[in-house]
Length: 261
Image (cartoon, rainbow, N blue to C red; front, side):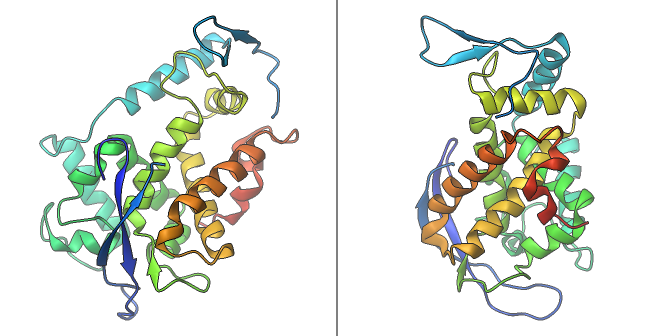
């Protein structure tokens, strides 16, 4: 997986007993990285861009800037905080198994492409690790279900959990236009309303999206070659749900009900 897309891997599921649902037999494939109107926003079209931009409240601007600051942080394996977060992710994923090192073949069990997860964070940055850790801590049952592929009639060749998680972070950043000074889509502007009310909104939306993606995966009876198609379907469904008129907070999004703590 390169900085903004690239190779994707599939994991062949091999039963190993109660602690791990699969071993990580890797094959290479290819993948791309993959409403409700707001009373406080109005669309403005700029001459240099065919898309409109949306005016924000001062609170929304501040929240967006803080989120952008998180997005801008690359994963750095030399920073103790980043090392600690990676160890915490392992402990949350496999509390019964001791990690031998930050570079270890064990990481493949979680769905990283190799023995050094830092090489897979390049596309999503440190926030993609924070997203996974938030998911593990706040929705441990759903996290474990997806990690161990415990629900549904699974494909022989499954998507790798961790790499898929980094893809989801990147997809959300693009979908919500979070690297722009102001959002240029209605779904992006709608999300900032939720962010202004809950600074963990991006992390929560990540959890919703991951679970929705797996739901789509099972519904489509997908295998690893279908990952792009599943991600596109997930994005369309998520955009549709975020723009429903009755949605006033992320917990109202229909796919939130897929999550279990």
